[in-house]
Length: 285
Image (tube, rainbow, N blue to C red; front, side, top):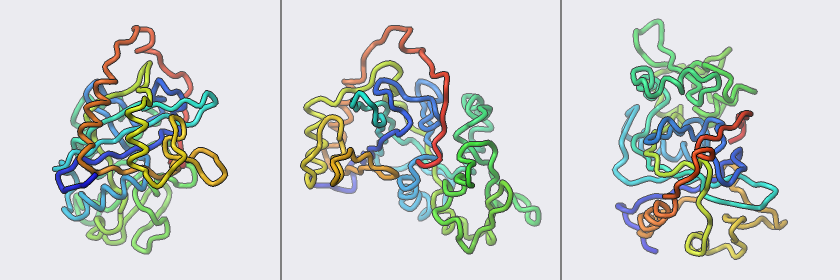
């Protein structure tokens, strides 16, 4: 397939903690705000780094609506049943720095439950310099999300030892606040339009979907309905740990339309409102 600047972009990844092929584990990312909105926060560091470099850094803006249509599509993690399905998909409506999304959520009541959650995926709040009023100079960790070994710092910046930062207690501070857009290279999260969020049934990998994945990964010959991203040299399933598949061609919109048609399944109410009792939080996503 050929590509142009107007093509939609698809990002596929494995939601490691959601091993159930028919339900998104309520572990924080993605976070279903309501039937219309999904918040994508501190997960898939490299994906957010790419989006930061492409949209936020060159514009030096804390929030921006991309002109291209960008879709994020998650598949469930590895499981003993060897079943893989699509468990959520969203269209990016607006990209934010964590500073700007925090300010947005503080003033909009639909986000209050997310903010009040003990392990909210909005796990930092902005810090401002005492010397210059309202001059942003870093972040403070606000809960236990990604707290082990200061993993939350790596959600904002790819180099913990960057010479332009100070990490002290629960704070990540810039030595020179004016360099934020050059230093905080992962300071990106986003709100998605909720196109599908599995709460009882995921989207099966049928012949059409499987053929698409094979076409998009033509250099791989060992793709099947479970090993959707192929297998490693030792024949283990490639789960793209820390990585993702990016697709940018003129078949993307057709694929999204197809997935939407597959996702319109009515479920019994007891399945739609089933909740997980035990939550886990990934420090390595």
